[in-house]
Image (cartoon, rainbow, N blue to C red; front, side, top):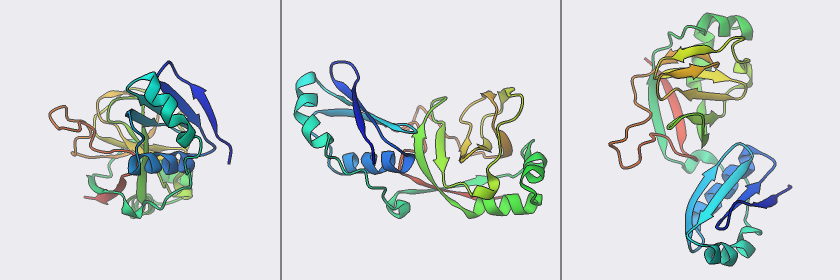
Length: 203
């Protein structure tokens, strides 16, 4: 497994890894045993950004970080969130055609899986979920929509997600949820955090 550390300013470092699974493994290891002075850790598809309170804390932590265990962890111990979904998305018929499945089969497969939150991106509260069944891997829409409604449940490639707010988007829409993904009045505004498990429940 390859890993590479890149400087990221005076008090942060970027760790590059080979896969999302190894990123989540490193993220879990740091969450379980955070080094002194760790200020924030941000996972992405193939990187983990770690920032510290000052350059001295970063220097002290680097030797241990270079030996960090990135072994992918089983996700069964992560907090579980269940999200109710109305499977009425504008692209549901198109997804069924692309996957050579019936609409009922698409709904059954999508709601029958357990997903893991890999990372956030695109917009506050937009969580990229991995664990999508290979049968549901579909491309982005040929033309993105200028406005996707908040709460839209969507997927493309190996990811599924919920749009936390009205925004442009090119993912295939299969449904919507009334569960808010982002609430600034909560202590943690994002409903979903990296490492959490997610199930969609057909309503």
